[in-house]
Image (cartoon, rainbow, N blue to C red; front, side, top):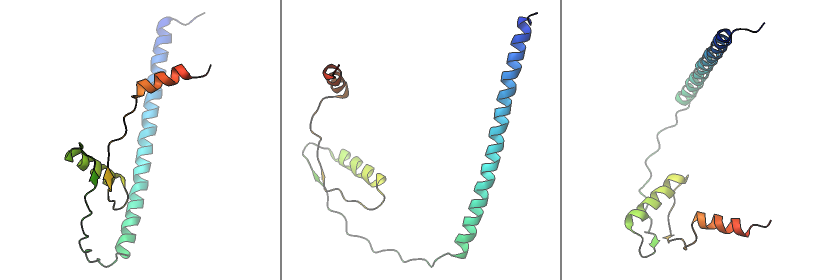
Length: 122
C-alpha cells in the first residue's frame, strides 16, 4: 500500500526544515567556538604586548620627496595620481615611479578570441 501524497509532502517538508534548523545550529555553535578562540588569542597577544612594550622610537626625519615620474605626453595628471596611488597601495614598502607610458595598441579581447578560435588546429 502506497503512502498518500499529503503524507509524502508533509514528511519531505518536515525533513527539509529539520535539516535546515540543524545546519543553522551547527553554524551558530561554530561561530561561538571561533569567537572564543579569537578572544583567547587576543587576550594572550595583549598580555605579551603589555609585557614587552618597547620604548617609543623617535619619528624619522622627513625623507626627500621622490622625483616626479617621466610621463608620456597625453596622460592627464589625474591618471598619473591614480596609478601612483594604486602602486603605493599594492606595494609593501616605499616605491618610486620612474615613468608612466601608454601600453601599445592591440586587439580587444573579443578580437583575440576570434583569432584563436579560427586559427586553432583541428
